[in-house]
Amino acid sequence: MIKPLSDCIVVEQDEEKQGLIIMPTVKLYSGIVVAVGDGKRLPNGTVTSMDVVVGDHIMFGEFTGQKVPFDGKDYLMMRNTEVIGLLNG
Image (cartoon, rainbow, N blue to C red; front, side, top):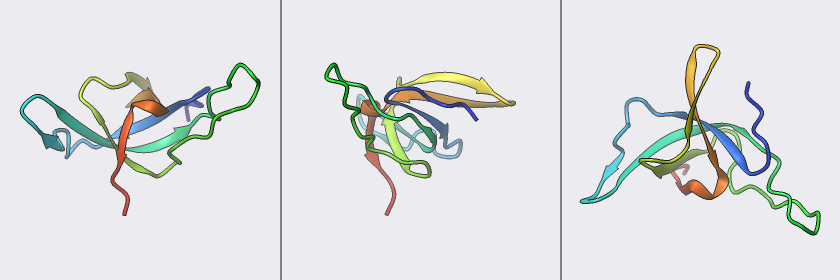
């Protein structure tokens, strides 16, 4: 699996729910977190905690992340701060 660095995460996008929520100007998408970095290192040396863990079902915006092909599948790599909500529950 891809090991994200810093505050990045790897997401497997939901194919059946590509347009999860449609508002007049915004499309939201969802996916499952499959890998999480250690957190962003601050100038003072501390590392921030991540808001998501592997297995979380998340929401993110239409133009969020970079597609990364790996082992025959496409994943999205994005920063922790680009996640706009959790669908777990």
